[in-house]
Amino acid sequence: MTTMNLRLSCFFALSLLAFGFNRHSANAQENENWVPDSIKSTVTELLKKYEFYHNSLSSDSDPDKEISFIRLFANPKILVLSDFAGDSAISKISIQDYSASIIENFPKGVTVRLLFSSLMIGKPHFDRNDRYILKARITQSKTGISSGKVLTSTRTVLFRIAFTWTGDKATDFEIYGIDEAPVQQNVFGIEAGPGLSVLTNSDIAGDDRFGLMYRPGYQASFQYSHYFNAHWGLSAGIRYGRIGSVLTLDSIDPYQGFNPGFSDVVFSNRLWQISIPMLLSWQYRFNNRWGAYADAGPMVSVRLFETQQVSGFSESRGKILDNIISDPGWISEMNRFSVNICLDAGLLLRINPTIQMGAGIGINHGLTSLDHGIHYNYEVARYLGQFNPLWGSDKATIARSAALKLRLTFTLKNESER
Image (cartoon, rainbow, N blue to C red; front, side, top):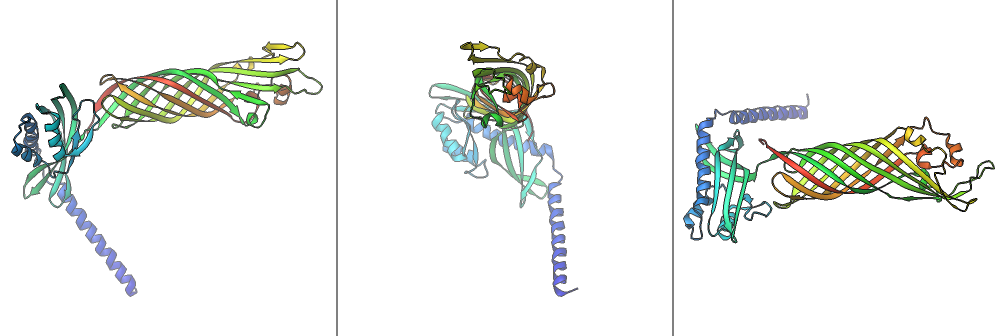
């Protein structure tokens, strides 16, 4: 073995020993014999001081109490939850600014109560040196008078509490921060609204004789959403709607001496379908009343039934004739299956903690296919007055639609441990 190899071997061996030692030390610190009751009682006493400070607050509050209150926290610059106005968004400010803002916003006093029967304390985790951090979850209710209005709020908050483990006991408990507790939500929603849609493919795009127009339709849906936290979740549901398209053709070309004599041909079709979306959902609250939402993901659709109307200008009769295709019924006999990517986004107005109303837009883009097994031969149908590239072509047909939606949701909150 060369000198270089020997050095490398020693280096890796020492590194492995050091890793094992550190891992053993960390595990030893994580596996201390904690006494939950003693920790819970100490945490309870600490949180009672937090509650007592607010109960005593007034315009002539004792500065010493404010200083004592700040000392409950590990650092006066630590950020904590702030929601002084009942209709304001939750923000984070330093505990120093928090204390000053309470006096400024609630000169007649404010009461913060903690429901200690709801107190749940997580397992302490080693941070560094001899310090450990635990999370205490508790329900907080606040009442205050600001600008002549009585403001109240109730929410579950998460205190991060640091303490030092010295010898055989925990000491020096301090609040390390306050956050809004994570909340899982189950949301049931219904939507409805008008829309526009169009169907197209490469045959149409490559032929100047054709023109496309969007056709009015509508969509209605029921959706269930499960949010894993305040912002992200998954949704699924069922949608019913009508889409369609209007295709215009300058004239039908003659074929082997046969000329149908039609110009300005209009193919107008409508189809009704059932869709099942699987979506990634996002939501955000600007304040206690207004919020935003967005859903995106794949959606599969199956047609229930479909109709087509075909009209054209008859050169021999000098007028527009309807139903110029002799047998349009073959369309409804075909099977249609669609795969789409859908995106919904909009704004929500909170009526109460359970009900929200909103408005937004939904966009779908995807492929739709027809079973060609019973269709007339493409070349024959093309010149017998039944030419429509949406149905006769082997090229992929693209379906696009957009809808304005009104949304009504019902929320059931299930709070969970972090």
